[in-house]
Length: 120
Length: 120
Length: 120
Length: 120
Image 1 (cartoon, rainbow over the protein chains, first blue to last red):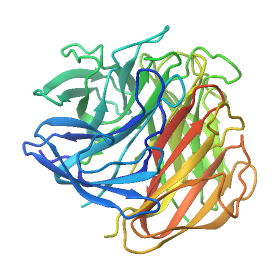
Image 2 (image 1 turned 90 degrees about the horizontal axis):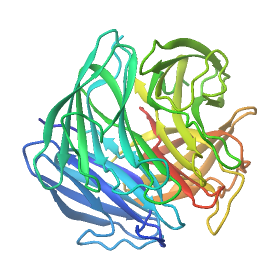
Image 3 (image 1 turned 135 degrees about the vertical axis):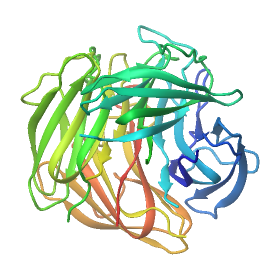
Image 4 (image 1 turned 180 degrees about the vertical axis):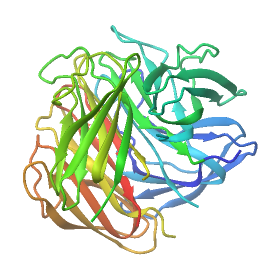
């Protein structure tokens, strides 16, 4: 079973600078690998005013999901309060959704979108 | 009339552990079947650290919608506060959208996305 | 210029029963018609436990957007607090997005998704 | 690398009239240009009851993202509290996502969606 796409784009990345209460403001890149093979992700981060950080490796095992917090990825430190964007390339087709929790003000807010699949 | 797709993917599933006020934190898989036939859904749930629970059956009658709460599906108990993902396969083409209500903190928050249609 | 699709699906419709503060809980079907022709929409509403209400007409003029509140459409009265779904068919290609404002609890919440385009 | 689409549509634009607290209600058109060329965007704004404002130019450098606030674009002044829609045309393929922050009431709310790609 090979489902999804091999390249996904998320234009709106932003980790809010502030948090209140028990929940920390964060974003997660959520990946589902329904295949029988390990998915090796190559994740790249783009910014408004400096060169991208490319090809950070993340693994998603076969028949597993991973909800990857962008403030906890080994190999890249994304500044808070700064616009960024993400490109995910995978060794096997996967599906990618991105979500943000914003707790800048009391009472958290959520948003989510399926990432954009680049057909290939 | 045969509209939509037969396989849909939702990478970001998460039922918040806590709730406040009159609304309980929950997620719903919302399905529309515009066809004249009964849609037999086979729903599979994927996790980060254990094997998936596959092929839970849900029925959507012809020309009906169903908003299926993932904490109320017969045949699977999804733990709260744990990342999961969903794959929906249907006997006829349908359309799938997923929404979350989070009432961890006073003042609920909502998020929604169309699921990702696997073309087949 | 003919942009978008002629049929769009929104599986998750729900007008919250309660509202607080100055904003009323509501949903809007937002349509953009970039063509030089008038778009005649035929909007159908599906429910969980009764027959659909089909073919309610709504007009979107050429080169105009319309943000159609589902609680203010002539020809259908959607009950609050009840799951529904929407199918939009247009005489010319348009683009459709759906948004919900929920003010059940103080501090409003928003969610949005592009509707699902049925290719034809 | 040429990724995304050259034309994108956002039907639901709305800049809330009011704001509370430290965050201002706003919307952003978030664009990622993964190509090695400069993307010249031609952005058009549609309304419910007047002619569109067409072809406002915005530049996105190669391998950069830009999160464009719609209340800060040179060449157009979008009134607050009024429904609008956006069409983005780019000289090279890009990916577009739109997000809204609403701080009408204390405790901000967010929503986001990938824009609709017109295939060409």
